[in-house]
Image (cartoon, rainbow, N blue to C red; front, top):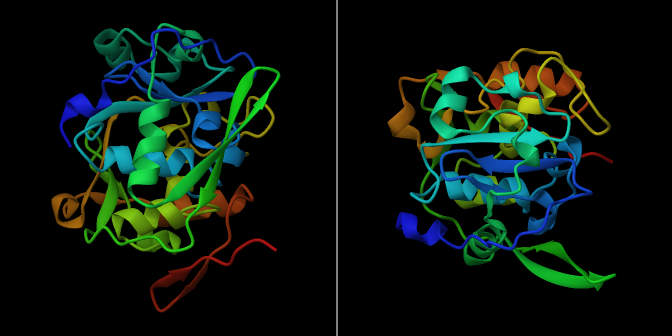
Length: 262
């Protein structure tokens, strides 16, 4: 897709007074409210929810629209130093960018890519003049026909969907990646305002230094072969998600499966 497909910002976007986090493309100064893609807005809500906000991010990172841009998940407890000095200098945004309401909205783009790929459909409900979005996962998701990993292009690290019990297919990883899947792992990697441990309700209960370590870096979802010489950090992330109570895995003969919560 051409980069112009991202140019759908709403100049009259209202401040998200009741949300906890925003998914922010620092390079393009665009944001996605998890609630605008049918998800709840705490890390342990949208991070664990399949076929919604993190799925949209995964798909956008898998095409020219956002691939290779600087990405972070920033919350209301964000601190300036949550992003590196070079990121702040380059983008003009720091760890408090949750409060920067001059950013454009990519809410429509997020919903469009989810519907276009057959991941989910959306229903709306208007309450007190506010339009609320509800994602309905599609029972059958078409394969994209390309196997991918999430790659930190600055650090040379990857998150492999297969190591979280997901398919490596671009579409299937997006659709099925909830509760400990690769999109949960990506949320942990980008959660800048969860660095050093939880700062608010619904945060990931982990002090592992990996949490938030990708925030502000250049990130993409790329074909497996393009990241063949990168370091796979998936096993470590599986461990931290398990210890934080955000996932369960069974590993046998090198094959990872992910029992669903009961």
